[in-house]
Length: 183
Image (cartoon, rainbow, N blue to C red; front, side, top):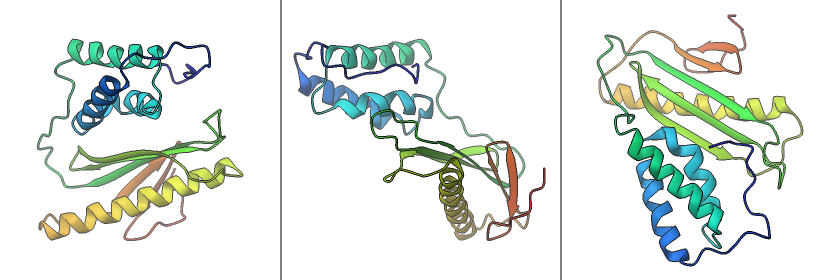
C-alpha cells in the first residue's frame, strides 16, 4: 500500500455494509500477530471503521489478495546459535497530514528472530524531529529492557550488550541507554 495515498475524501461513495467491513478489518488485525508485513496497511484501513467508504473496502480486499498470493510470508522462527537482543526504531515526524502527529515504531529481535514490534501514532504533536526520534528510542529502550528481563526469567541470560539501531545511528547499552555513538 502506498503510504502517500489519501483516503477519506468527502465525495467517496459510502460502503453498503459497514458491519461486513468491520468484521473483515477485525480479522485482518488479528492476522497481523503472525503477519507483521501487513501491519501498516491494516492500520490504515482500520482508521475508517466508523464510516467506511467503498475505497476503504477496496483497500481491504487488496490486502486479502496480497495474502492469498503470498501464503509463505509469515513469521518463521529458527535457531541462529546466539541469544543476542537487538532493537530497531524509527519515527516519522509530522507524517499525518490531518493532525501533524508523528508515528513511531520499533521492533525487537531475540536470537535473530522477531519477537515484538509496534507502530503507533503519537498522542501529541512534536516540535522537532529530534523530539520524535528521542521518544521512539525511549520506547525501544523500554521494550528491549522488557525482552531482556523476560529472557532472564526464562533462563536465557546472555552477558553480551543489547544493541539498538535507529535512523542510521547505532547505540549499544548495558541496562541503560548510553550516549556514546559507536558509528
